[in-house]
Image (cartoon, rainbow, N blue to C red; front, side, top):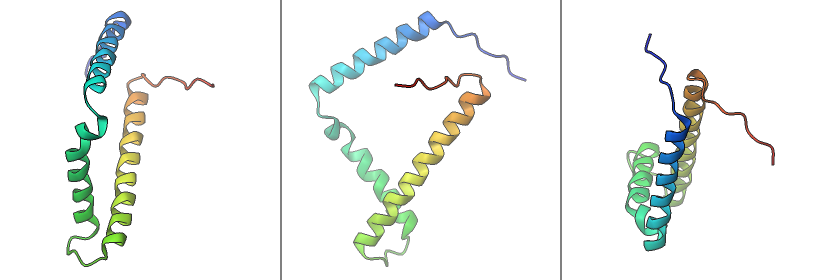
Length: 97
């Protein structure tokens, strides 16, 4: 069984802060849509091929199904993330607003 890592909260917070600074600098210089346009297009094309490999569906229906397949994929990823955090004891209770 792998050893459990000891997480230094101060170090984690430091690196999280560096990440926020980097993100703020990036978004101050470039438009977020420009940064992700190629990746978004490639991802939607992947799901287009997944739902209609022969290209026989009308474009509107293929796009609808591709968006639904993408939504299912992202929801599965979120579920796997929660399961992994729960396994590792890192699932934090949600705060009520």
